[in-house]
Length: 401
Ligand SMILES: C[S@@+](CC[C@H](N)C(=O)[O-])C[C@H]1O[C@@H](n2cnc3c(N)ncnc32)[C@H](O)[C@@H]1O
Image (cartoon, rainbow, N blue to C red; front, side):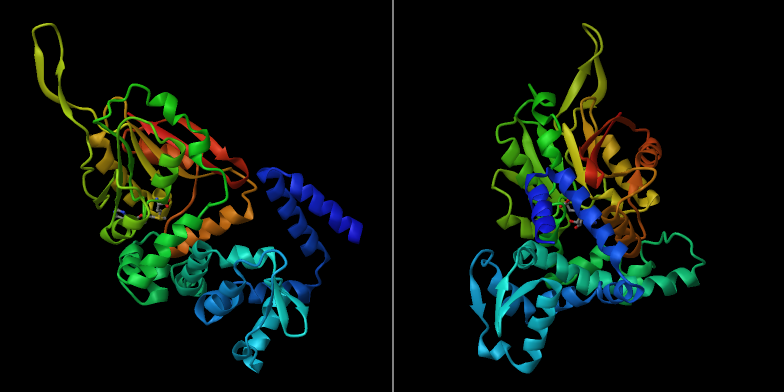
């Protein structure tokens, strides 16, 4: 057994990220293949809430995970007497049984890799979002689907989320209407796909924007949240010419103050309204003496939308895209940084994201065929699709006129 474990650890240490994911999937399947029915049931019935609950809701965050955050190596923590009451002692024991902590000896717990992974602030924010907002939607889902005849939900204001949270607000109005929820959600976006490759590693932004005038908008992060992607873009390409603009609803734009550098233009903008960043207007010369009367919009080079349209039904996505199309110039591109699902054998994480989209927003993750149909509906063409994290089905769907 020891040599088997050592061999697997060795494999993991030398694996690239695709191989590592394959290894994780294989180990999971191996675990399932040796479970009894009761083992499977016990794991499943506790899956959605316990770790989230402990890590996100009660004192577990500051007292437990926070305490072990920096203790990935030899640090061993004698638990403070106040959290070694019978009740919290039972919680620690439970977390240790899940591998979240390691029980090194009587009343002594040390961290594991799992501890420090969960203790990262942006991951804590994600656990909070799932515990606070997602899990109730999963509990509501069976009832909602039964009542609506197992149709795909499509309502923005009367979907599973609204029934679960007893609100008629659309999801983002609900989220940003509460400062604590809004802050957690915005921070959670940093964790989303945080350790996977980024499109900025692969997409040829530098090549494509050679010669772009420095007074024109280069990169507009539409619905960019608190700006974590804008920051990644600038870290990867600090010297590209042109303006960089971050747009979102007022609350994330406020949060972005402490995230993005000062040279980023922060702009509150509702993407259901016309895109205001259209660059300079120029007059187009048709022939030697004749200047056309028509103003020629130059548009920004990139309108970048990461994980935006997956939050929306086709109907609303068409509205969002329609508000971008008039801003486009000949050289403009809309970059949809999204999942591009394969037509079969979709992996666990992607199907989980898809179901979260269903319960949160009545929306979905899409395949390339679905993307083509969607952008085609507003007269756009897919120019290319650039996959950048194949194991996770992430890609940039590049669209233009
Ligand atoms: C899934 S998050 C993605 C955030 C960011 N693009 C990222 O990848 O980190 C969706 C974002 O859309 C924003 N959003 C929702 N409705 C919006 C609207 N009507 N106008 C502008 N932004 C909106 C939310 O505030 C949120 O920041």
